[in-house]
Structure formats: structure tokens, C-alpha cells
Image 1: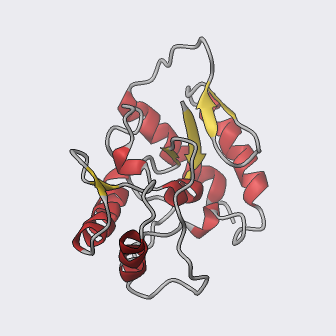
Image 2 (image 1 turned 180 degrees about the vertical axis):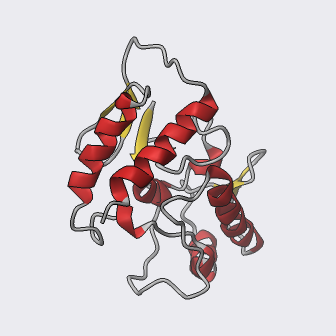
Amino acid sequence: MSKVPVLAAFAAVASLSACSTTTATLPQVASLETSGTAAPSSTTSAAPAAEQPYIRLDATQDEIAQMFKGWYACLKDNGHKMIVGRGSPDFQSNTPADQAAVQACKNKHPYGPDEMDPKKNPHYYDDYHAYMKCLPEHGLMVHAIDPFGTGWTYDDGVSQKLSEAQMDKVQLDCQVQSFGNH
């Protein structure tokens, strides 16, 4: 099971549709599950609209989930193909209707946090290194995947000793500690 930082995960947009219990039907703040395939990204490179939801570095899973629910509802209302039974968009589908829905809902697509964007944070890789050091120091037995800075996975053959809630707290605390120090 592979994890990716928030920003890469937003590109994958698999957060609310992930099957694993690790994301517990809500996206992780520090990381989200992905099937390994990136979803189509927005075609615009302009700055986010003022009304576009911004994900703070210290946002909780519930806060992020609410932002994505709003975006998913917009996509559905605008004709994007949805995964039956999950309520999340099918990002494997890329029809003209899907593309039009993504365009129509671009102002509802959550973005951020800027601290976790390598293009906006000149210290991103140093921060990511600190994050990857923090997680196991606080009981979450994981290691970085290649290429470095793109995510992490659980250590093989190691039983996690933390509860789901404890893992979520460690991820959030380490994220804020590692990326919020500038």
C-alpha cells in the first residue's frame, strides 16, 4: 500500500474512493492512498480562484473530506462519470463530458497546502526528509518510496502498533512540525 503527499494525492483524487481502511473513507492530511495512476489535472496554470477551497497545513481529515465532497458533488452535478456506490468521480474516464465537468468545477477543487508543494516551497525536500524521519520516531513504521518526495509505504513485515486515530494524529503532527517550520 503506497502513500503520497497531499499534493500528489490531490492530483490522483482517489482520496474518498480508496478501498483501504488506512484512509478510512477520508483522505489523509499528510498522505492519501492512490492506485498509482494519476488523474487528469486541471488544464489551467493560473492562480487559484479566491473562492477555491484552500487546504491548510493543519487541516484535519474531516475538513479535507468536506472540501472534496463539495468538489465531487459539483462534478456529479455537471455530468462527470461517477463510481457507482462510492459517490466519487471515475477519474479513469476522460470523456468530453468529464472534461467539461472538471472545467466547470475548477473553482471548487481543493488545493494546497503550499508548504507541501515542491514548486512553492524551496525547502520541500528538506522538509520531506524531516517528515519521513518524524513518522517512525513517533511510531508509524514507514519508509519513503522512489522517487523521494512522492510518498511513503508501510514497512514490510512490521505490524503497526498505533491505532488508526493515532496514525492520523502522528501524520498530521509530523506534517505540521516538518513543513510548517519556515
